[in-house]
Length: 129
Image 1 (spheres, rainbow, N blue to C red):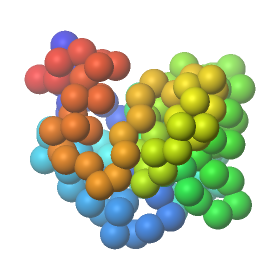
Image 2: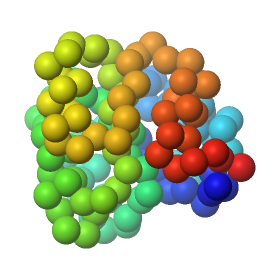
Image 3: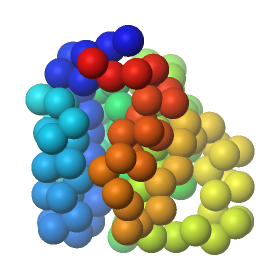
Image 4: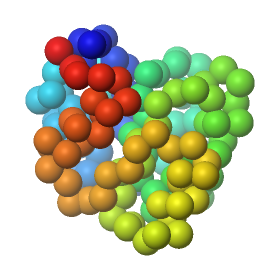
């Protein structure tokens, strides 16, 4: 049972307001080390250089979407096992299925309740303290 404060998180979303909301939600849940980037192209080198334990990424982003980002993370031998949760407004079955095939750890559809995000994180890390 890990302490939320010990888990480093990277939030990736092209919408500033959504990044801020996710950051606040995570901080309310006890996470202290929460970083964010506006695009997957910015986030990929950041997580390669300063490893995090959890990536929470939007699906719909310009330049590199969440699936392409997930694929790039999984292909990297150093960060490939990083927990990856897709947080997105898309609940299309094909997107969910493709994310599962690429190795997403969990999937949360926006709008979301903080308890739903906590539950998805705990499914991967166990109960947070």
